[in-house]
Image (cartoon, rainbow, N blue to C red; front, side, top):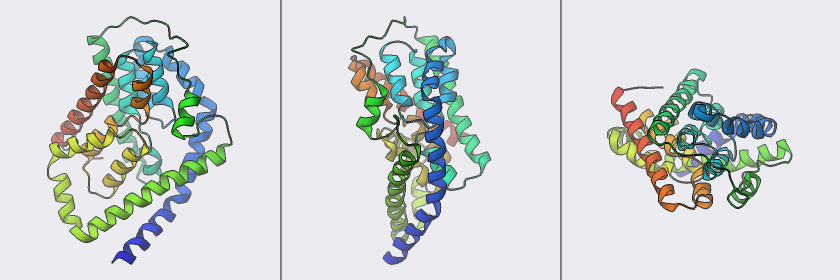
Length: 288
């Protein structure tokens, strides 16, 4: 059984490799061409920040959530805009869904839900909390290129193909390890048993998925997406975890924003919104 699991895992990994590479190559190209423009659009969005932020945030861009944290630390954008970007950021979810050839309509529904939740939450927060804007100082500003180098996300200047290959191999490694563990669990425990354990308790599933989402790197979105694709995680639980997952955004926020109490409050707010949204989706019986 162990040998069969290894074989199946490697075959599945090889199947998605070309799709994953093409997806990341396209993303690298878009990011190199439009990265700075995206940040400028968010800065100039004003009261429409949550709308613009949620739409732009859903496109996986290395360092975009980090950029949002920097802009918020300098009060260039509102708290609502920051939260909308964090909630809509899809990190590695989109490339994995595309590489696994998930139906386009399903992908659009998932992205649409993330955009909608991010937008609504952002506008509500901005209505409740009004904060004055002030300029960002040189001391407060952390260059996105420096953060990207620190996080090894390779989003600065460089060759698009080599960056895409590095990113592809990195995520493929995560997917392979996670798939192996999942296949091993299925083989030992049984798919039906695991499915009942994870999907039979929607509230607990959303709470646990939200905790996974707090992991500040791409591993969180990879785990959540793979669990969903394997049928071991419900749609609501997946959405809960992916909403909470803000990539390296939270790490940057804790680094550049000196108010630690505020950072903790933002983290808790992000977690609560994500979990409650997931529970609502579960209760409503929505499927993608």
